[in-house]
Amino acid sequence: MGKIIRLDEVTINQIAAGEVVERPASVVKELIENSIDAGAKKIEVYLANGGRQKIQVVDDGSGMERDDALLAVERHATSKIRTLADLQQSKTLGFRGEALSSIAAVSRVILQTCADPAVPGTKILVEGGVVRAVEPVGVPRGTNISVENLFYNTPARLKFMRSIPAEVTNIKEIVTSMALGYPEISFRLFHHDMELLHTLGSGDYEQTLEQIFNRSICQELFPVEGSYGPLRLTGFLGRPNIARGNRGLQYFFLNRRFFRSRLVATAAERAYDTLLPVARFPFLLLNMELPLDLVDVNVHPTKMEVKFREEKEIFRGVLQIVRAALESNVIATQWRPQYKSTVLSRVPRPEQTPMGVFPAAPFGEEASSLETVSGTGVTVVKENTPPFAETGTLKGPVPAGEVYQEVALPAEEEPEQGGDLETGPAPSGNQVGKEQGSDRVFSLFDTYLLWEDASALVLVDQHAAHERILYDRFRSGPRLKMQYFLTPLMLELTATQWETVKAEEALLQELGWDFEAFGGETLILRSGPQDFPVPEVEELFLSLLDELGGSSSGREEDPKDRLFKLMACRRAIKAGDRLSPQEATALIRDLRRTKVPQTCPHGRPTMVVITKTEIEKMFQRR
Ligand code: ADP
Ligand code: MG
Image 1 (cartoon, rainbow, N blue to C red):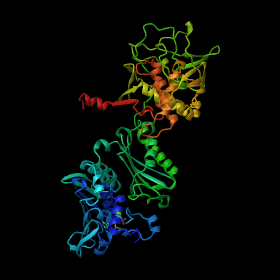
Image 2 (tube, helix red, strand yellow):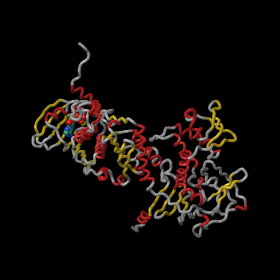
Image 3 (cartoon, rainbow, N blue to C red):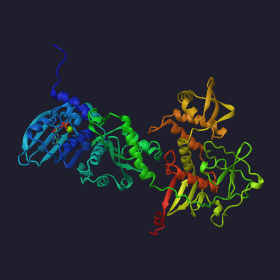
Image 4 (cartoon, rainbow, N blue to C red):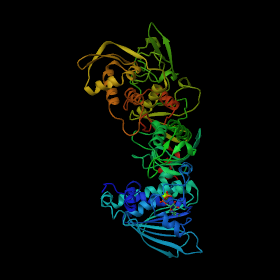
């Protein structure tokens, strides 16, 4: 007798169930999809013991006739497609015809359904895939399916069930996702007597969001809408302040099918860029529409993943559309400093105005209060009207192509005195730019800059702000200039650092580093980026290697961007550095000119705005 036998139907279904029905949440998903496909307007889900004991889904959809109901619990029985060609065109959520049979194979199912209220409905009892009873029953139009004792006959599966709260959380996520994808359907979820979710099915997206999420989330959402080639995208995005430590608040739909996608998540997160710190993930509700021939939905048994034909184009499209929405809703509308010209700093004035050492480097080429005078071979920076000459506290950036040096002012060029600290705004001679205004900038703890803007108190973190300015400049500017060291540096590298040097040679050279192996563990470093003082350069180089060698956390990042962030951080003025009024003004002005003034390159805020209304509330004037 041969060794090969044909498996019986029940065994086949139990094996298939392993793919389709992983846990209670998968059952819920399949049943809800069937209800949606049946045109239900109202779907109710009842759970007992996290779904282990019972999952009941009641809908008001089309229902089934007796014979269809009997077929439905058989494997590969579907009303939705007839041929493979139909599959490609299928707009229904189900089409494989294996959900009901799989579920019925590993549980006890009571199916009650009615397609026409004029005739009695049908009740079917299935146990472990075997139909035990079929009888007429008086039920309203629709389907009521109860799945009990899930996995009772597959002990291996049963062992993998998680705790009741964990299963409930999972189910709630599935129902939430479905409710978000179908605002025109009313969803209700109960665990025993506890209602966990209720949407009214008005069809209105904003109402549905409010029925699902609390106010603190809803008020931070804004719509996104756009097209990119054949891709159309609509939905809602969350402002950075409601980002999470995981991707729990991301919902993607493709042609109304809920799916998961690393590609889409990464593209959208890339659009947030430095608006978010690493390992923070935004709220995303994205409804994508694509012609059916540009996507294969049948690559996954539970259809949770899809295969895009043009992955790169999808990535670009999502990135662009999300970016545009962020630009008009987060970057542009949040507060941008209104640059006002006259700045009075409360920065304490040095006892005696020193002979004057200019700030080593002002904030770049826009520092219009500084004029450049050519001296003998060196470029001398001359300050127009410094109210308070100060020693160069600023290790600021040098705009590409210009060289600033610390130079002592010749005696006769001693800066004239500007505005008086005690008596109010600096004279007009101190104005920078054309705008008129009377804002005063204060320095707090030598770390924050404070001023009044229109009807708000604005606080800026000087380090974070400078980081943002430098990062933008590194990223958008021309190639970094390099400086050769008089004496090359000899560095001892670890094995890991050596690997990084070899792997990232081109990138490091692009940033101005010239080096070669010396023998043994030693590396000769001949040059580095121009903006960095030589004493700091060795440490910077090693930090860059460690940054490149270390794994980036969470979101994928361009290695160059990671280096720019690190360099911006190292180069930026620090908390505790005392700024001159010009520097303070220039900092604010330059910050305003950056693309994303609200956050530093690591995603932390550069500024905090407290509105007049908020202040009034604090003092109970409102
Ligand atoms: P699929 O959804 O892939 O077709 P299923 O096993 O999930 O396969 O369902 C089999 C068939 O049973 C469906 O094609 C549909 O005709 C019918 N059916 C299942 N659930 C319902 C429901 N809630 N209301 C009406 N018909 C249903
Ligand atoms: Mg189905």
